[in-house]
Image 1 (cartoon, rainbow, N blue to C red):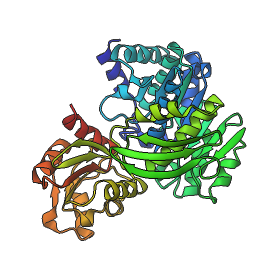
Image 2: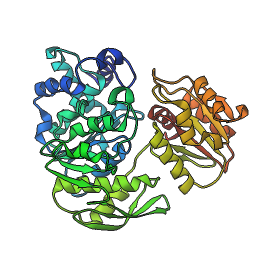
Image 3: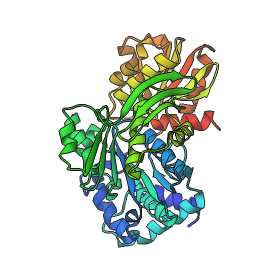
Image 4: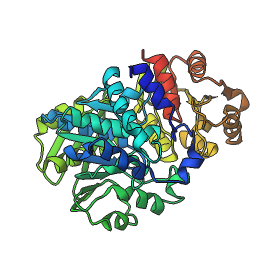
Length: 434
């Protein structure tokens, strides 16, 4: 298969991210149970290298990128698997930080296609990509892999990996239709990645949830604000200046070129995960160089000036609050225009309130490029219910048109913030960055 044919074959499968086939598949076999026979047919590639397995409600991708940067900085050949992608599916799998090229992706997808007829049930889009990534990492003989959970943990396709290090960033409410209605249910699902041979890096600090993770009987546990954490977290030009500590060392004056105070916790978690995999502390100079190289597209990413244009994939209430806090601390006053598109299962009034829509100069409601998108008119109605004047609420269906409209209407000294879904951010980024 050539690259175009391979991606077309991939796209022909059930895609839970887009909601295609969700009701039928969700009642059937867990994703992890569909992937096990698939990776067995591919030679169980996930057993060929140690892995850091990352779950959590928010921060997973940033932690995965930071952990990868640290492992590459110490000289390890490192594969990374993250999701979803913003613009191209190739973004999901990388080797030493470089995304897979089209021809190699086609080769890996063809290998999965070759064994698909021997499966009792066809794998989904995400399951195929998971197997392809794990196989590619074996083919290039990585020395470590950093694997981000797609959703949840226990039943996720990535849970065929027995992570030598199991990372939990945090637990808040999201994906309740799959993971359960409260934080205990969500924590139990995420705890499913913790194996008896794992070192658990526990970023969630709520003592009420800790027993859920500790009951998994990991080989060892390191806990944020006890064994590792952040001593100081200061705003710096272009990012944050941090003082981090782990059970193995102290790392003052670490610059991370990412916006948002929450990235300090992500950095501490990633540093601890890397040390746990390597079973030793890292040299402070190596840590400084690695963190200085980290980029996280679509996460408080500045892509324009006058007006300032930021992209942030906040897609749940906790993420929206983190975005709002970061905007207040790092970008100051100025009339703010929100460009928002949401997916179903998100309560629009709750999300808009968390984003500070009532204080925005303008709210531009658009359609996320997904079959699961909430109607822009429904978003606009929710904004008006929150008290946003009707003349400050616009409906522009297409994301790109909505962004162009927002930039044209914004004060040159103001801010345009594109958010609500990574699908919205991806579409905007394709327009603004290239």
